[in-house]
Length: 598
Ligand SMILES: *[C@@H]1O[C@H](CO)[C@@H](O)[C@H](O)[C@H]1NC(C)=O
Ligand SMILES: *[C@@H]1O[C@H](CO)[C@@H](O)[C@H](O)[C@H]1NC(C)=O
Image 1 (cartoon, protein in one colour):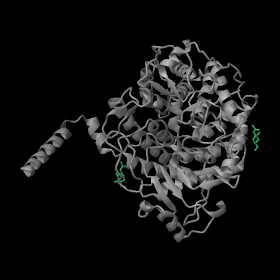
Image 2 (cartoon, helix red, strand yellow; image 1 turned 60 degrees about the horizontal axis):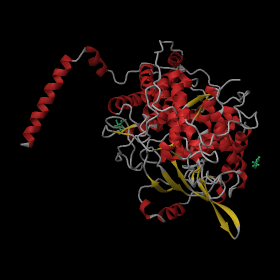
Image 3 (cartoon, helix red, strand yellow; image 1 turned 90 degrees about the horizontal axis):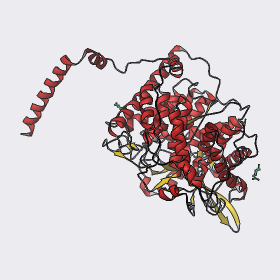
Image 4 (cartoon, rainbow, N blue to C red; image 1 turned 90 degrees about the vertical axis):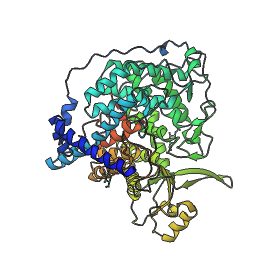
């Protein structure tokens, strides 16, 4: 019976197909015949996007149901230092790109369109199944609100829509964003960090690109919401904003310990908001936070860096023995050179960013980066973790050769620092770190690196000769990894890939700074691997195991996939004038903030 049913089904399908072929409007029928039509070749088209002078729709922001700027603070933050005048004479950041040959431009145009196709599919599904929700679930087509329910994916994707020239979609999204109610939250506490980087960052960047006033008004609402997180006894921000207490203005309780990235990742958003509005209050509030880090930078167990966990309640940023530029700490370090790029170093309150940057970069080079033992002796660097242990009364840094996808931003950051501080060693170190992540992508069968892994440290952190026995011994200490690890890797502790952007972020920055073709080629390999393994009916999903081709997927797609990962891929293949690093600095969610000109 089952068999008969199947034959009937096949017959019916064939009938349907034939009918469709005859009755489909001819436009569709022809597009079916064209395999991936190439509409835009070369780099000329982008200039059109950027000068697109089409009618800008009039969109008026709806005020949120609560006015965050009306809160009476029991602990009003200091209003100084004032925002300094705009920085002058920034060094040149990007490589001087020459015009490309027609053939190369054609290839890059094709790649760009391919990235855009993947973005468009995800966007269409979000629009259809998860509109105004925080995220689409890419396998089930359901949705989830995990960031207070203010349409995180929508806000996070605004600037990508703009860059890809999807103006109709952009303005449709702006219209929706203009109605978001930041006076209501789906959660009783609001995560300061996520709200700052995704919502505030997303709104500022979309405003900086489009100049649309509705976006500025919404950015100010979110800025004032976050500013309420500074209503604390010592002026340090909370990690989570207690919603009702914050509205009352009666003062918030600063948590005992937090990860350093949380208080350390506000500088760019608050400083840019002050620049846009002319109101110094945001800049002043965050400047005091960074003073705390600055004053104690050399007093930690690893002078130059701060421990992963800090207490803003006690203003203690020195106790603690674990150091890393990876998760929990990452964007605190990222924002030091970037704050210097945005603010310059000409006033007493901004000088600290350059000093903190140079000091941390020197410490990281000496204590965190290592050259792994590899069969081909590739000259690459990986960023590990450093624990400072007590050896008979002497604090001794010990490097643990464990790394993670989150750490991959550091190559791009060092390259940027190399240009900002005119330091060739930073730049070369950045290139080697970026190549380290590219290596890790290539090494795994899917062409994607794992979320967390271990490699083998060379003694004295110098080059070392490959040894099968040494590798096997280190690997076999952890039985479960025995079978399916590429040479040189001793674990894939967390074998997932959850659509993260950090590796392509560094490859993008290295491409824009060095102009070396190797980075654009690496990006294309990475894109194909990622697009392939994560593709779902609706969009793209995290995968469970990068060491298995055809790995199972998870019903999970965070807003950073469209805000960051696909944006960086697109920008690698775009005209280097689009979001030039000489004109913009990107926040940790890949949102570009315009660098003010003196
Ligand atoms: C920390 O040390 C670096 C040099 O290693 C120095 O340039 C910097 O000024 C010091 N920071 C403070 C706050 O003293
Ligand atoms: C993934 O790669 C396989 C093998 O190369 C190919 O057949 C398939 O079409 C690709 N899928 C996507 C979504 O690109």
